[in-house]
Image (cartoon, rainbow, N blue to C red; front, top):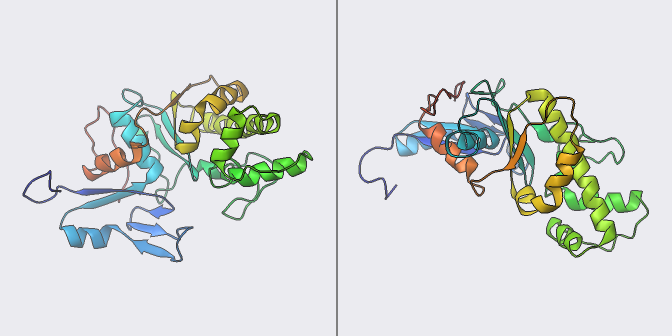
Length: 264
C-alpha cells in the first residue's frame, strides 16, 4: 500500500484455501480452524473501503498462470498443486470452472486407490490427498512398509523420505515409484475429466522433488486421451498470489479472451 501512493484502493483480491463460498465471501468449515464460517470479504471491504473479491487458492493459481505464467495463450489449462494438500484450478474454453459455490476441481478427493485404503483428512478412504500430499505422505510410507513387510525405521517427514531416496535406499526408491503411480492415477483422472492442453504443476512436494517424481508420473499416466503437456510452474510458488491480484482487478481481467465467470 505504501508503494501504491495516496488515493483509494481499486480493490483487494483474496486467495483462500477452501472450502469457500465466493457468493457470500466466506471461508466455510475450514479443516484447520474450529469455526464453521469465517466471513472475509465484508469485514475487509468495511476496513479498507474498497471492493474485496475472493477465490479458492487453486482457482487463483490458475488465474496467475493464465496471466503471468505458462498458461498464457492457452484456453484449456489445469493448475495442479501438490503441497500440504492437493487441489486444482481449471480453465476450460477460456473460463474458470468454479462450480456452485467456488469449489470445483477439488481433485485431491478423487479416488485413486483401494489397495492401501488410507483415510483422507476428510474422513473418506482412498483419496489422492490422503496419500500424496505433504501432510499424508509420511503416513503412506509407514503403511506401505507394513503392507510389504518392510522395516519402517523412518524417515518420518516428506523431506526425509525424498532425501533417503536420493541416497539410494532401495525400499524408499520403491516407495517413491509407488507414490508416483498414485500421482499418475490422479493426473489420469484430471486428464479424462478436463481434457486440458497443459497441466501446470505447483506446490512444494512436486517442485522440490520433480527429478524423482515427474518422469515416473509421466510414464505411468493413462493414454486414453492424448497426453497434455505436463510442466512445472515457472512462478516460484507465487501463482495464487498473482491470481489474487487478477481477482482484485475484477472478473473481466483483460488477459486476452480470458474472463473469470461467476460472482463473489
